[in-house]
Amino acid sequence: MTQINDALGRLFAAMRDVAELDEGALISILDAFFQDHRRQLPELFDGAETDAMWWASIAAPIDMEAALNACAIYLPVTPMHVSARKRVMAASFTWLSDADRARFLAWASRQPAQTDQEAAA
Image 1 (spheres, rainbow, N blue to C red):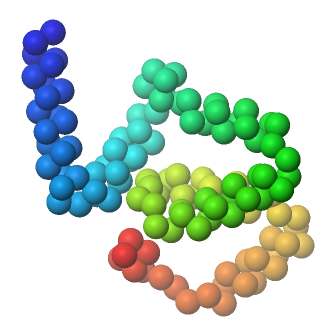
Image 2 (cartoon, rainbow, N blue to C red; image 1 turned 45 degrees about the vertical axis):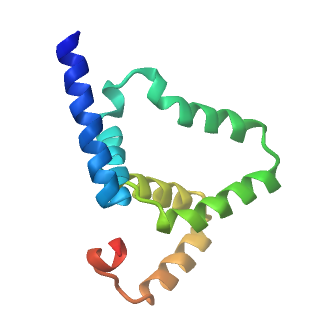
Image 3 (cartoon, rainbow, N blue to C red; image 1 turned 90 degrees about the vertical axis):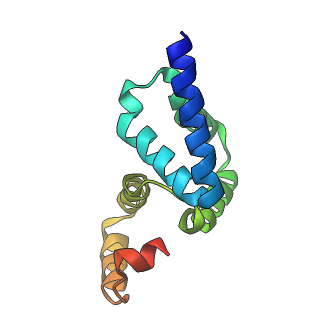
């Protein structure tokens, strides 16, 4: 047990050091870890998804819209694993009708391309 405690102590000290240098980098690293290993983690780490599904099942449409709009505002400035961003965008796209998907794709094709570095900034 002492060995585990020592290892955890070193891990948390390293995380604190990274957070002091760049809090966003630490959040991105932890988010990537949880995204890549979520199936191996205890159910405790899936609580947010379960809670969100429960809330959405009872929320009024206006409340869901408000929550989605708030998330849309914070997503661009929140460090997040790229696969999580893609899942959100893909889910949003599938909600559209065929006609709206076509209009969205036409609109998106007219938008200026952004490099990965520009997107990360």
